[in-house]
Amino acid sequence: MRNPCGAGTRPGLWRTDRAVHHAILRHGRAPRAGQESARGAAEPVRHNGGMTESDPFRVIFVCTGNICRSPMAEVVFRDIAAKQGLGDRIVSTSAGTGDWHVGEQADSRTIDALARRGYDGTKHRARQFTYDSFTGNDLVVALDRTHERILKQWARDESEEGKVTLLLSFEHNPSVLDVPDPYYADARVFDEVLGMIESASHGLFRQLEPAIRPSRP
Image (tube, rainbow, N blue to C red; front, side, top):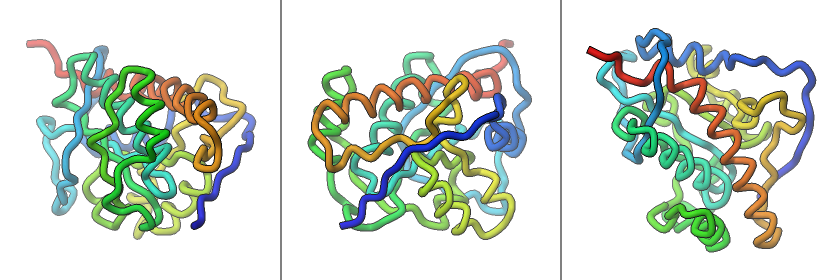
């Protein structure tokens, strides 16, 4: 079973994520002061890219098998959004680049790590990223550069490629860009990985929230 992982650095990382900026423009929203929210849901196919301001903003997190890192990110981001009162404005889902675990629960160590931080990961069922995942989401967030490279290779046009970004790019001045794969590690590493995902997810939310929060009457 393949489970690639890795870590690396990139100096001079941009502060405002371009994928987020273009996703907001595609969604037809102008940035404004406010907050965020998220919930799990099936991916819709948006024919001809048609969306309205009432549509939720859809984010999908992608790792290798969709049982460790990306389920953590999905659950964490949904929780952040819900606590900000925007659970109906952002949809958070996840998928894997491979099909080894389709239909399975998250790794038990993932579920345990989430539970230790007060999250419920028991409802997750793994699935594989497909072309419809590009069509049905506004933003595609890769957990490491291996996933980022694969997703950009799968993209059928510049618009789809432009949806792909790295989760750790939302850290403030990040020195590491890859969330390490904890699959062959122990519970301590799962906790550390979850901490990285929590921090970067808050950064992602801060960029999205001003555009997602409904304008006041």
